[in-house]
Length: 234
Image 1: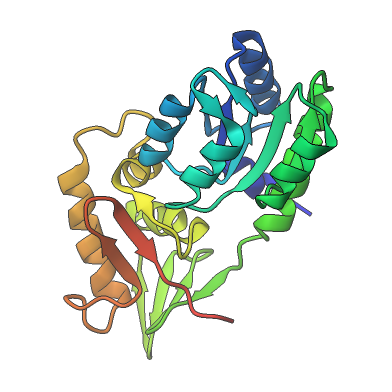
Image 2: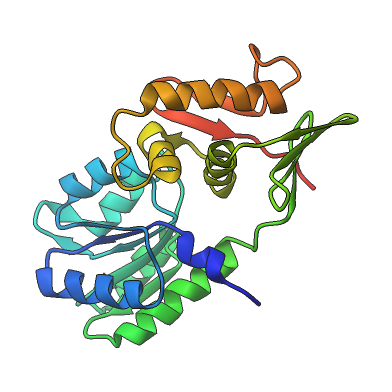
């Protein structure tokens, strides 16, 4: 099975050891992961997540200004993601605390980098199933393979940017995708200054997918944060 789509997921690594951060980032990049964010404090991690929500977070338990357990609880108040705790503390109480909070895995230092990569892929595989060709919304279907919207008996074509934006929204279906994250998905690593252009694209997408674009039910604005795509159950 082609799992390249898993390598497009955004990974956040929070650890205060510079060498470990560099090593983990290096191994993930070698495996093909492209969207990797890092932080060395609780404060920095919160700032990163406010800009770009991760699909999976690798959190150290002991941090200079707090702990990974509290950080996970704080971040999950606003966004949802898979979690691996990465720590030198291997006591059963810590492991059970992390898993009890809803963490997906727990890895004790020192560890083999390849093992971490395998665990990351295993969690992503369980959490994010392969994207279907057709996605059902309230009033239409998105055909990502053909870059088309099927709406009643009409077929509407998506531009490249519209396709990129809808893909980013679908990969986080039901979750808020920030303006910065959407701009990065459509315009690359330097997305600043595209906010107005993004709004114009969102308007055009709504014209294609919504029955009443001025009263959207599938592509929702979350004021001050970003947008959310609501997908119907299959």
